[in-house]
Structures are given as structure tokens and as C-alpha cells.
Length: 379
Image (cartoon, rainbow, N blue to C red; front, side):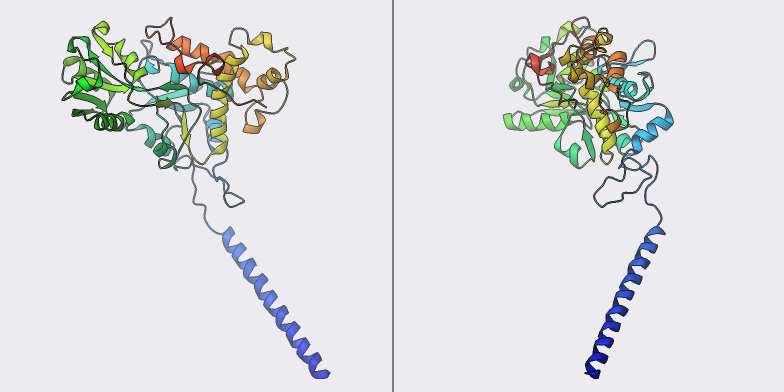
């Protein structure tokens, strides 16, 4: 009996010693982890430049970092296009204006209650993604097509599509060309760093058409070569063709072939890794679409402020905490529509019947009018 007691005492003592060593090991690991230097920095990394760390595995380490950076700076840095009239260009007064620019202004309005709290940095097609990945810009809004590769391998997230487009080809009327097949052997200009290069190759290979691709660094050089006759045709999104046709010496001497080479959903783009910023860009964009559906615009918005409709009250921030959920004021949608307007106003201002482009809404109509624009519920 005494031996059994002694054996039991030894066993308990051994177990206690093992448990104590286990606790010591855990404490050492925890202490060591607190001494590890941070591997993140501000603003320069591909993941959004966070200076915060995650408390749980799998959480984004950049939660809120872009918004904090933007608020500290006092304005939003938007990567844009300086060569595409109607979408993004510098006007005679030296101002960046256009359809894409207005969506940047909408974000500034939501954050600062000031649509002019932005800096637009014109970027080439080659420069745009590097500028976004490195944190040089907060958001890219530059007639950029949503593709699988860009949404995955390049580490970007696409917000809602703001313009549904398709790739086209422009030729001179004098050429007599009316179909893609008649471009056999033609010299076709494309801008490097764009999806147009691959789309052109894919479609012409499928159709068995041989051609010579001539690559240019920017759209100005491409259009200049086309006008001088150095290339027989040039290709980009149809919206871009319409935009640049209006700037040609003799716009009526050119035409855009009816055939489309691709689908081109264009919209704002952000870095992956900052869900808060992604949500802000998404819901600011949706606000312009929802406002049109609700019949709210920049001129009549005050009339809706006393509405008893719960949908409108939530949308305008009169009840609920929809803005606070993203780190924005609850009246962020009111700010966007008051300062910039709803989607219809933005489209009409830069591309509609009262502009030189005279574009029809087409697929870019609200879903209630047979288009593809559709906002999830604000609730």
C-alpha cells in the first residue's frame, strides 16, 4: 500500500512538472512574439500600407488604413486619364474633368463634404496598376476593364461597374471598310498595357484574319498616327473611340465599325487588403445608382429630407447607422448626391445628348429602364 502511494506521488509530481514546463514554453513564445518588429509600413505596400496588425488569423491587416491616410492628408488621390475627353481629361482651364473624375469627386464628397478634395494624377495604361499597388494613388478610376487576372493576380478589387462598354475599331470612311473581315492585312494601332491588344489577337485569330499590330505608349500618339495614315485603323473601347473621334480634325470622315470585339466593364479599382476602403468605394458608387432609381437628384434632394419613407430615410442618413458602419458620416449618400449628382446627372453632364458625344445610355440605363445598373439595398 505504501509503495502504491509513493508511486502515485511520483506520477503526480511528474505530471505537475510537465504542465509547468508547458506553461513556461507558452509564456516564452508569447513574450518572444511581442518583441518581433512590425513588417508593415505606411502607404507603400501592395496591401494598402497598413500600420496595424490583425488580432486573428485570416483578418485583413489593412482594415481602415486607406481611409485614415486619406483623412490625415485631407484629400483623395485618384489615378485617372488625362487624354480621354468625356471620361478624364484636362480642360482649357487646367481642370481635370469627366465622367470618371466625378466618381472620384463623389468619394471626396462622402468623406469631406467637399467634392474638390481630390488630386487627380493622370496615368498611362502601363503606369496605372503600379501606381495603385505601390500606394501612389488611393483609387484608380481610369476607364479600366474588370478582368480575372486584374481581380486576382494583380491584387486589385473592382468596385461596381460604372460604364458597360465593348471594344471597337475605327477606320476612315474613305477606306470603304465595313466589317472586320475587310481588315485583312491592315496595320492596326493599339495602346500598350491594355486589354485591347489581347482582345484584338483573340478575335482576329478566331476569324482567321491576318493583320499587323502597331503598339503605342499612349492614346495621343496612337491617334496622331491614325490621323497621319501611319496605321489603317485603331482600336480601343467604343466609348474611347467616340470620345477621340470628336477631337479629330475631320470627325465626320471616320466611322466606328458596328462589330464589338469584347465585353468591357469599366469601373473604380482599389488595392486588395483594405475591406473598409473597398466598402466605401462600392457604396458611394451604388449611391449614385440608387439615387437615380429613387428619383433623387442634386436639385430636388432637399425635398426628400422630410420623407417618411424608411428606404429614403436610411439612404439619406436620417435614420440608421449605414455610414458609421464604414467609418463615414451617416449622411454620406446625401453629400454625394448634393455635391455631385446621381448617375443620370453624371452621365448627362459628360456624355449625354447635350455634349459633343451624344451617347445613349444603352446598357448603362438603370435596371428599371432595361439597363444593367442595379444597386443592392441600402439597409
